[in-house]
Image 1 (cartoon, rainbow, N blue to C red):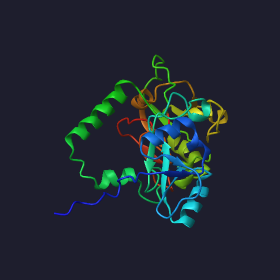
Image 2: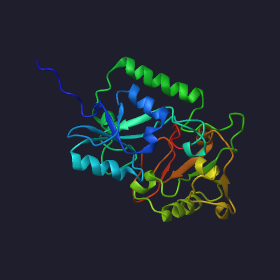
Image 3: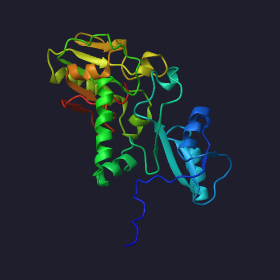
Image 4: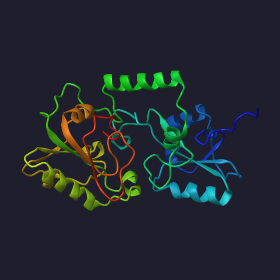
Length: 275
């Protein structure tokens, strides 16, 4: 029997041509080289690999060069367990990277490598599944999130509130999902109309708290039953205490929602993705 070919989600390895200064920083350069992608400058040949940072504003440079030279793209994003603080807030380099030669996990226009694995891989490797379960249990036990500047000793608000998740203005995950600013206004109205009498807490994004990038809500929204939540609460504790959470393009723990509407969730708490 002839050996099976590579799976669609198998990552190509080899020299990586980059045109983004962030990927050239020493920690990331070393990380990429150790993972099988030594960085190169110059122009790629046909079939070579071109690396770029997700869907950043500078991604067009690598996309254009790759298209003209018939090279292959690999996009990189921060790992879901990134650092203590956001990169813009002094968090430094990420602890890891998510490579994807098929898409980006927050872009609904095309399936990402993660989606293809979850949808098509047999996932019948017992050791791998045990590692996954152990990793999830350790994340929960250690109260870890993407960003981890929360105070483990700070008690969460009394339970029973509706949690509205803010996101950064102009963030790629919001932009690619097709979510506009008015959706965030509708989220807040929905939270109050559908839950009369309930407290509504707006979870401010860490980069907004540190003054790096604006979100969609501000002090003017903290009226009546609505309040902003900027204290360093544990994201997991906040999820455990809410009666419902409302988010737009990027829920804590999931990749995306419908690009046209905000979605509400009363599911069990999941690992935050941008907390």
